Image 1 (cartoon, rainbow, N blue to C red):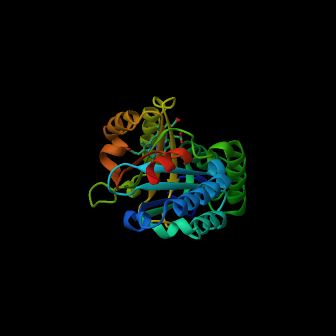
Image 2 (image 1 turned 135 degrees about the vertical axis):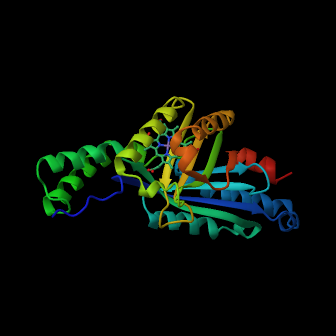
Image 3 (image 1 turned 30 degrees about the vertical axis):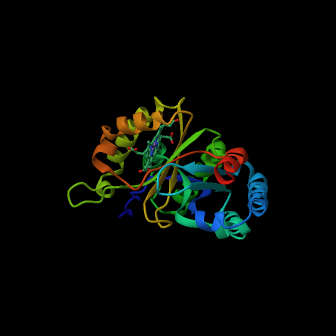
Length: 268
Ligand code: 76R
């Protein structure tokens, strides 16, 4: 008898992501002279400049944090380097962490999963056998190459970002993880159709964080108009996969913070 098929969709993983949310200790910051503040800031800006478009700094609305740094790196070792580079900066003594989030860019291949498993079954290839594993590894390799720009993106250069972690429901009654793969694929297809209508207005980067952080996915939305976040997320609430199976963590909305804006915020 054949072993059962995996229930997970095939996924492609890309850049390792760290979101660092932090606030300034104003009392400590104000207690140093303006020349020192300027040089601390200059050093911070110079470090961010070396990180280029793979790190983005945003100022965050509301009390949850003052700033959010988003790091996209090719792997976890490089992500750790980025985190420690920031941590060792003298200005970091004046910042206090609010929270952080670790995840990895994830493309869920719901559609091709069904096709690949179906094709292998038609050919009579035994699930989990060497030929079965090799065929899947080759398929993923090909897709990984084709999808490379989406798997290893830069932080999109938009004015606004909306970041939040989320789960799929695992309740006694409604449980995403006990739905058959085909049903989840159909629901995700619907989800994609809603999302695609916003494609020109918003850039969405989904990162998986099962086993990496407290929620299952991180959602990053990048747009030039923050109203798009409200419209898109409101519309998605009616889409069955969100209406029935989505649970959300805290929302963080930020606005791009370049060197000029940083000086405006911190030097006056
Ligand atoms: O990646 C793709 O474009 C393929 C289709 C697609 C997948 C697989 C897609 C499209 N998403 C996918 C996966 Mn999404 N997405 C969210 C949220 O607020 C809510 O209700 C949910 C938060 C938004 C706003 C959003 C937007 N998506 C996922 C997953 C992984 C689930 C899994 O694997 O089980 C989650 C958690 C998730 C959540 N999605 C899109 C969008 C948008 C705008 C698109 C279209 C993108 C485009 O075509 O450019």
